Image (cartoon, rainbow, N blue to C red; front, side, top):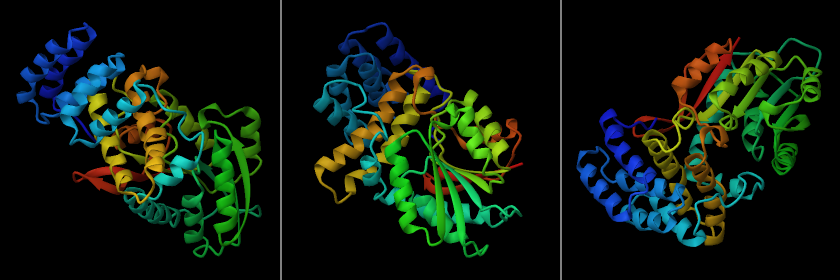
Length: 360
């Protein structure tokens, strides 16, 4: 979604070369001043230089340069984070605890996105009736979060098909998230439900876990809401092929960001990270929560993710957010017919988040 113009990339490469060559801060600032007038987003010169300095362990200098663009949400967050922690490292493992996520779901962005996602997913499900079978209706949910999304979807579609029972297979690598989702669904789904938790990353699913899923076929559809961007493109294709063996229907909810293919330190990667996570984090500042909870949410969710993407070589990233155009290519290569993406949140007149259906 957030892309630089070719001329901007060519100009910004001089900053990358300056930092890679260990140029002094004074000389680096001179380079920034020289190219700034030629950029469409002039202040990004400080964001880019600050991220590169932080990534190359020049933390004090990164703080000095981030403050030059403190009107930008991302730079403000990074400035505050580096001042407090003094190191450009993630504060902790994202989603090891459900608490930061529970704070984030209160944001205006998440609430609006989720409402439109539920409606879009329901519209897709209305076109694919449950399998004609004597076995219970079964749905796979990859990364169920706190369980609220899938619960609302079930409550929305159950009356359409007169469902009185549903079996849910939850796939998530964190026990805390599985427990949270299971508890929420047991209490909030309006029909009887059975929940089968499978603790793993979908791309690392074992033969035993696969057999457990296969025993519950036919499976109506697989839902993945903001949960499969932890996989690089080369693994997304076999992942989709695996899901195709479970069910002919796959529903994807994702963000339209460019964090998969661009290389480390590239202007394209850092521009997309700064712009997308800046918008992603902005609503957190407006939440009626304590400063302690605000920091907990920011530092253990968007900030930790952004630092990992910026600092790690591509093979070691924990997030590979992929654009709509790339998902269309991946889905077709995996053998799916890919439906049109429906935007669930718009920023700068472009889809920021979306829902897309895949069918065999």
